[in-house]
Image (tube, rainbow, N blue to C red; front, side, top):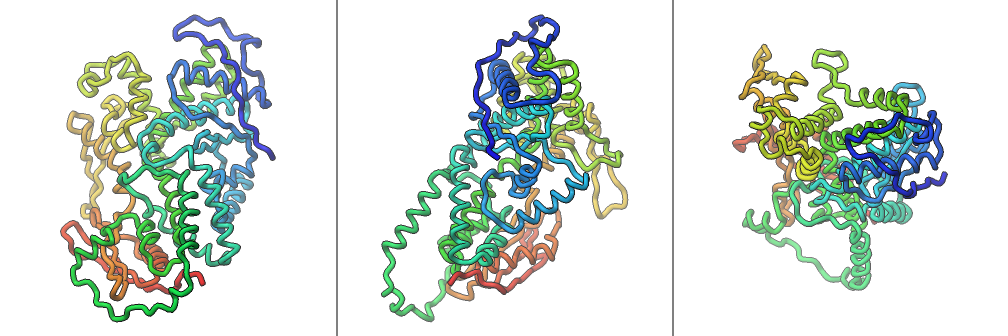
Length: 533
């Protein structure tokens, strides 16, 4: 099936905020009924764009909207939502599982998938009604799109212009590796790299990722190897018995240790990997880095998109572009998305990021336009400014979930959502309410909620600390234990086995507390060497 992008249309005349509009009539409606065709989607896209850019002041990448089937949506699920990706057995496994559950009615499918690229690609389901298509376009093609383009994390760590070209290069490169080195060896290398994806990202800026140049740089590396290759080098005797450096600090400095990005270190320093395997690790590492900002901005990203689609769909109804029935259909879906079960509800499984994000965006709008004295005391920077969208755009651009909650969660919203802090200490046989609705309690609740979105506490802090390349070549890692929580032993050994296989020698992991005391030590030998002939 050929997927057709939506084209730009002539702008629709819009009403000014507060302007009295006539009751809706069929001539003014964008559509009637639930059915749709591509012309209807184009009309909706154009009307939505007029509100998003003209009234809300959003700044977006060019849009490309593609209609896909449920099977294509399942395929996108399996390949972690990417439009182009290399082949791997795990993707087929995920597809079979998701398809079976979907066919049996045990799970639903997302209304859309949106890709952080330029142009921004939004996939919409062909089974959706036209109202849901309009909702998805407002949510993904303008809400998520604006957030992708303007948030500092995405600007710092992703390359929207280069990601599609890089994925195309990655898919072709790994396919060539399978043809040349065999599917089994390539998949085992990918298995090991996938196991380390969460430990394959840079947490602090080094240089802006430029994916457009990565494929070119790999070609340059291969060309340089061809130019420098000389078979006579095989006959040159190697030095044996070379004395290992005695200065540990000098050795660690030469290796740039400690290193938190394990994939990066293995890519650059693993002594037994072939060059093509290093490139495979580099590909997986770039994909992991691409997804890193999305993990850190779930509440903000979904809150931005949900607030955007709510404002746009409401404005379409106010101006008579969609009927009362269509608006009720939208509200039914919207309220289901932002529903937050209470803590004692059997359906409770944590805080719904859509609910928290949307509530905070609405609260920022309220504080900017109609603040209380409490709001003015807590948020003097924008309370009563009268420009809600300016305050929202500033928040969307300059924060991630942790800092956003620390800066913008208000006492009013804490009371409205009935938040409190329940302290659960494994050494005590009772729960303790650690924060209630008073001045100190508000700050405590906000601090503890923000900590749940702290990227540094979500993943274990595991770093490569030492290796003696001239000695036994054993790789030494350290896990800095937080709050006395050790790694799950079986899972840790499984992941360390992948590290050992990539490294080619034994791996030793120390789990140390804040004082440097070793709580546990795990050693894993290199059983399978992933070395190409």
